[in-house]
Image 1: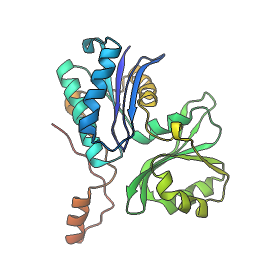
Image 2: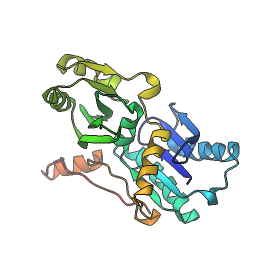
Image 3: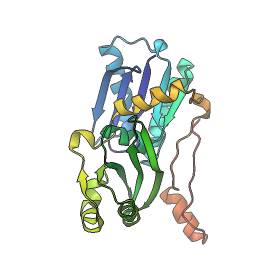
Image 4: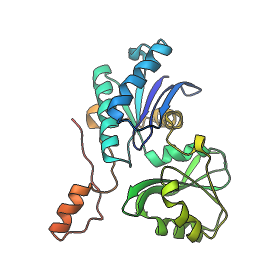
Length: 246
């Protein structure tokens, strides 16, 4: 089984080619370029370096959200285009779940945090079970960083934070957290397509795929434009939305 994995949910653009047993190639860039400039050239480079015939892949894995609205749209459009052209299914993997896999095997709680602006983060709370399977203590959600640290304090176990929200909210975390805590080192702290591919392979074996036509990103919360419109109409902004691309 061969899977192409794509994640453009945050500042990082990352693409991988993997099987259920190995990561054949991974290309990750954390630099100030738009994902529309990076994803296809990265995929093309992997294709050339591994002499890959795209017709031989079994599925395309995509970080389905949450994350940057623009990044998710670009990643979803790329995955949908490949899926439609190659007639291959897509495997939707929650962004924060895949980030938690970077810390596979730890006995501490894992808390990825992505900067969602307006003092909020996209996050989830995880642990690795007896068989080292990823277990959701709390599935991914968007909330104030103070709410997140409060939840972790209530759990009362050591925690490791990772993600692009760490440098933004590090001081707030340090001031609010009351349990032992650590911050993941740089090579483990951002999205990695290899981790995404690992979860995707598990999902694929369980039959958890969607057609390219049916895929849509999971934003968890509405866009700024929608929030402003809701405020003007006197509605609550604490709703989620999904957008189907194509």
